[in-house]
Length: 198
Image (cartoon, rainbow, N blue to C red):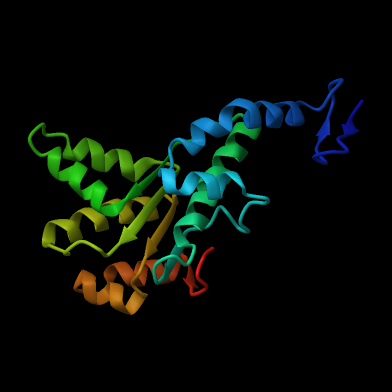
């Protein structure tokens, strides 16, 4: 006989709600593994999350000046998507990476011929968060590498969140053409962050 859980609202057939049990396990054990995948500066803000951001399954391009909450929003989505996958017992692969660090890692992989492997890895994740796009100089290699990763993710309908200080017009100038900014405009929710995050 099916029952409806008074706590989470899900329907279940067992003696107790398995979803609430999983949530309890996530809060006790799982959330710390997720938080440790985020930069230390974000962990406290994300841990205090009262409710997940709306529409957390969309692609987002979040832009605005420093300290306006772009990265915190992205971190909250990262945490929420992990929590959802844990609750539904579904495998989920995600990375939160600062773009200059990603490029540094890719450059370092040249010597070991691992560049293709890393590009494939970032191209296939269920969720990729690219923080601080546009702070590096945009060489031809940077342009080609970022476009390759983002285009593959677009083709495979994989969720991507980008944070940047650059508007889309500024991004087009930084990138040297409008290919990337047009793709973002077509397939991302674009949010300008203006309020200084406390």
